[in-house]
Amino acid sequence: MDVRSKVYLYQTSVKWTEQRKGTISCAGKPDVQVATPPEFKGHENIWSPEDLFVASANVCLMTTFLAVAERAGLAFTSYESTAEGRLEIVEGKFQFTAITIRPSITLKPGSDAAKAKELIEKAEHNCLISNSMKAAVTLEATIG
Image (tube, rainbow, N blue to C red; front, side, top):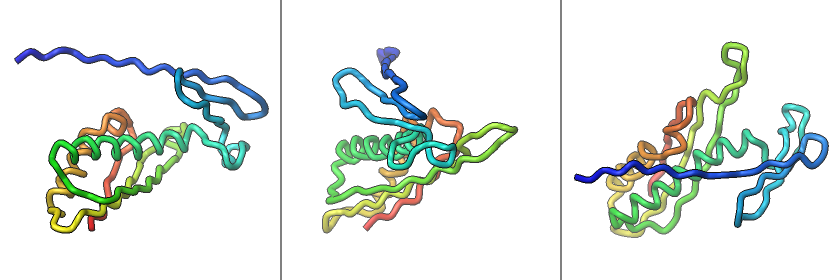
């Protein structure tokens, strides 16, 4: 079996704009305004690094699930998910210690709920973002 190493590079830029705000950018994609969160003397209604950290785990689980579900031929009608990250001080430093992701998957009539559960667990196991984090990522799936 021919196994090749795969390496992918992702580049982003950040530019300070004013106060505790900036803009992140990535070639070919829309810019996103970012800021320090209100808990740290920042701004309301603007994405923070903390929001993006938790969202990256949430999005990765969804996209990984979509890939494994497609390969397995799982018929579903919707996928929605919430995620909550726990930020606390550990050894004098702020750190995310846990992220809980709560996907809700609605199956087409006649689809196998046990298979869906197996596939979302496989997606969680193979999610490259959560596999790259120190925080414990917990899955609480609802399948209906």
